[in-house]
Image (cartoon, rainbow, N blue to C red; front, top):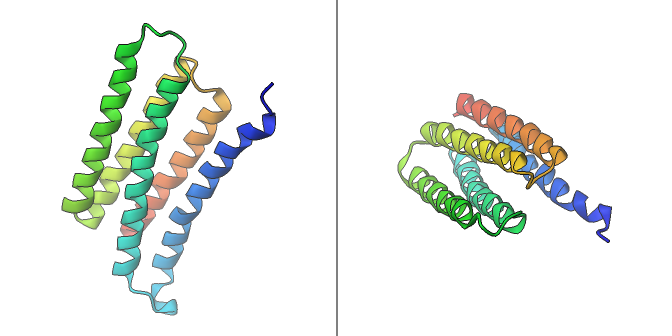
Length: 153
């Protein structure tokens, strides 16, 4: 029997992963008062976004594999693997080649794409509604955070 308290651990990590997004925005707002260069904060913010995007690619692919209902759906699992690799490579290119503002716009769209994949996984009954609702809430806050960061740059 699965312990229900174990199901709260991923939710706790998702909420904890949101905290740096809010913290970096706070640092950007207070840069003059605390003496931290906004360039340094933006670099760290970009790096955090990069890591979270790569992590989310793995999460989406992992859910698609771990919670499969039918072994005949190997093609769909391969598509999730392909999409995860593609999103990771696009994130890397954006991290290296894009300006800060363009990177934040691009990474916002990547996070929204991961959310769309979660809607698909929900439809396929691989995730439950509470997970989907939390992902929707977290994604909205992350995208708002990235939009706010663009005004501070």
